[in-house]
Image (cartoon, rainbow, N blue to C red; front, side, top):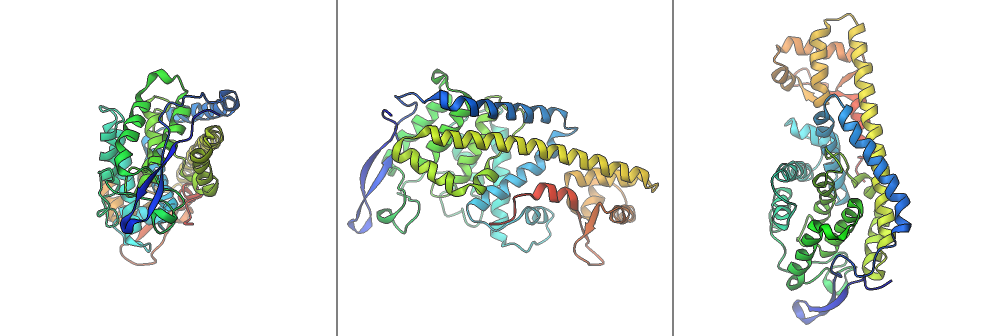
Length: 385
């Protein structure tokens, strides 16, 4: 298979125990990938991405879909790391309604949303570089848990995965003194037009290499998953950042970890890339179907409202607002729609009667309404593990 595995170096921990740490082989590989094995899946993935990209063009408001989709991704990506927060917890938190989930979990998910938006904005005038990766990491870790984990700084100490110390860990990433060489090589690979590798293959390789380097004390998984989306947007594969692999990786967690480990131990990049491309195709197709379901739902409910004979204009105004904020308070709806509180309450009552929204507090004041069917579509797969 040629040289595609890295090498082990010996490090020494406190107390004098020595351990083996892994330093990955620099990119691009000296021995070429078996592209013949990858082309069929690459074609499927590209077709699925093309459909998804086309979908973003026909959505009446792509930013509306994106708004919810980014939040769904934040919940899923954080769940892979063990948070217990759901999509409705996050939306309640953003409405400043105290949720039932552990507060730290929800704040962590909320930081992911701002890290993602920050990265996309910066990429408009700044290359995908180590500096930008550090800036995004700082946004990601702006919470109670991440604050003491060197936000925005590459690690200066040894970390490990699994086990209680480097000596008994499942995997030990490169020691700190090797870190900048590995990262410099990865940065060059991201910008290297000479590799002539298809963009999706490059994204899959970059993700795995990033996870192997594990350059931060915390947040590596979440940042590595963001990296995939950023690469596809920078390279123009997607106009809108609508592809997120966290649901696929959450559903196939063990296979994901096994493939990454096999890349390190045997250099079998083809099997990892097949797994990755399958995920891209499945995820893109799911995202397209979700967008279609959401559009069909909005249309069905709009007709219901128009046919109800009630004061349709006010109710449609609130319905349009709920498409962007499927969990809301009466106060927020009043402020955003610029109407009186009685108008909001009347409209919500009408929507409740039509079976479109549901009030979830049971209280007389400070009511919270949920656009139930929309939340059901969005929440698929986001139940905490």
